[in-house]
Length: 337
Image 1 (cartoon, rainbow, N blue to C red):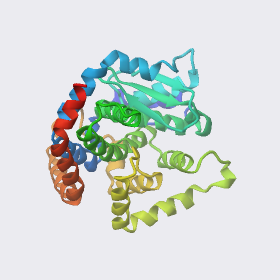
Image 2: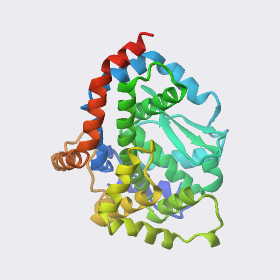
Image 3: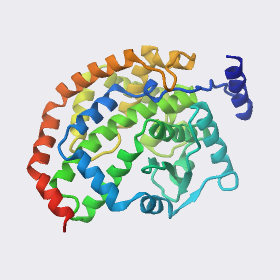
């Protein structure tokens, strides 16, 4: 305990002593994973040809070309390139006790976003637009969110989603109807995975206001402080919290919009729900499952969530499964062209 306290104080000193953070030593990723994330992925894996599609895409590209494609037009962040960003990144890695330092790159892109990609060797791409409109702490939250994706083993599926989207847009023959069905399922899961990593980012920052302020800016664009009001944004999010059926309807609509992320207002609402359960405070106090430790209670919760999700999304998944069954041969014939 003394060692962990020393690490916490050390992090606060390096951060200028303004905000003491607990180092979440050996934290297991499932402490922050949203039940809908795991349930959606389980449902996706039941889609026929899912494994076959991913295997073929993986073999078609390979690890090295994928890394080069993502990194060739970006700058590796280090103590000599974007040193302040690098310092913030290192602190986020330390707070989440990440197993290793994943390569971080800055890409000259005005869109405010970031992504964790890779197959066997994950890395993070941070868009320069994110650096421009967010404060240092808000930027750190975004990087911690991406670290959460890596620690939760999301990156292979995230990478496959991007590749399938690009191939579909290009009309490439590898993307037959079966692969498109898998892509729809991947997008459904991707939105749920964001809810998990919002929690990871919050645990890294240990300040809900920073996280919600970042989401306000990402939703509304770059503005001065006198033009926006975080309290009003939270009230807007509460409108969704007060009517769960409305949120459910929004998620169903998103199924046909091709979005990889849920709306920021919904993400704020989901985070506030999680905070109010007491789970966030419990983890920050140090009461969490360590890596390698079993967590039967979590498995039981996941089983219940998967059952509820499967019932709620039955029509959606049935439509994907039907399309995949009908088009499995179409996909395989596309690969042979």
